[in-house]
Length: 628
Image (cartoon, rainbow, N blue to C red):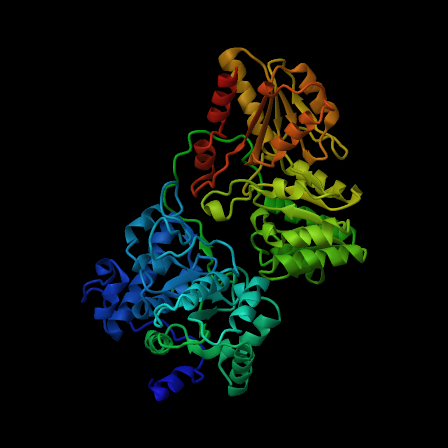
């Protein structure tokens, strides 16, 4: 091994990323990107051509994602890193590449022959916004959550090592400094560092931003290295990772392709776990002259949207995120014990204004949902009133804390779960369709879902009256406009609401599906003359046994409707209540549970997702008519 080359690769570099690549006169040279159908073609390109390719990739992503929408900033920051990785490793056959979270993988998709797919990015039937093994053998796993890459990559490396495989074979995990805050990442580092021989490479993509700017002591420790390395700062960081058992390389300029390639060439023959610390700029090349708080994390897209055949009656007003954030500020103004806790989702949950107004009572725990929930439990037991604002799909990551620290202790934590239900273009990794099932089985919990923004405010206000934790789920996007919302009357825990009468059956609807149920009722009456009763259930736990029982006994059919997995959801709770015998005789032929079937639902417009599983108005009408 060339020891002098190894020392050069490990020497501390100035961490500030280089400015934009050398200017390219695009009119005088043929574009390179159209000729790249796979990583093998990178071998024929020299240093200047690879720099040109990086510029072309950025231009392509800015143009394409600007039209379709999608994650932008993360991919722009790792262009040179992705080129260097694919130039030095064989991720189609010998090696494996695991992207943490996955929204930084757009350049990887381009270099692995998927440029044409960007026209349908995140659209129904089109290319996923995350790695997906069904799309390409270069995608090792389908990832959409953070902190998982090191464990997965270590699994490959450990299996290869135990099997006595090719010594040149490596598993590479690319993880951001935001994801490195996750406890699971440290668990993996702690385990991997115990092996003297393990073909594992962890690339720490340090840009100081997850969605919001990174927070916490780790971000504070890394900040001086991004600003400009001092030998003392680098030495401390090297000592930390090498004490964990990793060979440390860096910090390296993450936009210097040649320097990155030199390091990866060394690591192709490295027997021990290694950590490569690269410093990048998220959003590089996009409006560089205009500072932007979230690093241009995602764009909405300016191109034409898919035609939606039906307007869904639950939409049209303010977003549920805004209504939640506005009202939590009202609650905090009134009671100084109200604190809000989120996990790297200030923007997504609408809490930026709250954080600016109540900085001492808004706690961003970083990408660390387990800690966020444990923190909320402790605050509740100390007498404060914590509100955990976490997406439904991300609260799953803190399940043990929900059980051990919250439910078991009967801690009065209010969980406001944004993105409950199908979320559209983020797809299967982000659909929040399991929260009723994983919370309903916990003793001491109350579970609610509002039909509209006004009812969300009512539920937030009444949560304090429950002797234990409360979870309120609400969907992504807008609810019914204020002028179209049904009247809001006071209600108590476990009290449902009858919205319409009828004798042909009853629709028990949960959450915003109550408005969908009313439209279904209108359509069925117009087409068949039969009139369905409609109930806004409000609660999945406790259920309104009185109102549900009355319809159970009197109606020919009981139909439950929810934007959640049918297994373990609201409908399952109604079926369990019926099976208990407390409502009278059980006749399962009279019961229909309409929810999300036992499969993952891919990305697309929410209306397309609903139609694909028969939960749009047309599908629900057809299911009920066929039942008759």
